[in-house]
Length: 190
Image (tube, rainbow, N blue to C red; front, side, top):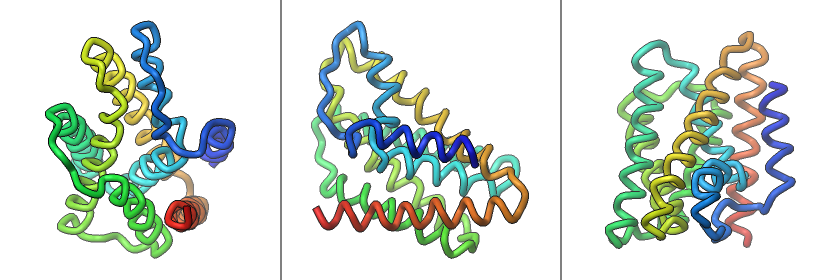
């Protein structure tokens, strides 16, 4: 719980959304990529939610959610680098906040047939949107490596926080879910 609160507070020290168009100098390619998911509460909250949700599963199913998320994040990045269009990717990000919020607040465990496509589609949207900001080829690889490293860290933080006692986990899921719903509403209001 403490690490979640620290992460949440840290996001308020940076710009509100991660899609800020950071310039990517070669020196800061990896660092810029690593910082990117941490610089916007929308991405941080969604990735933390996925990790928190994955803690409900044991073994391969939990790792499957992580793997699926990273694969579709990379696929979204690849589609953007091919200059292919993913219509409404930013809308998909907003919907990911609502979806994660509803899943966490309801405290029900959706079936694999629901959660796996949910994770895949919204990871695709997040990856696509991130890739728009790493269009310089010689920097993009370092940026992407940093971005994936940070994403994996956030997912694991969510999963570790999901290992608290049952009462604390239910509280953390509800708080995270409500934060996702509120943030989604704020984004739509802008």
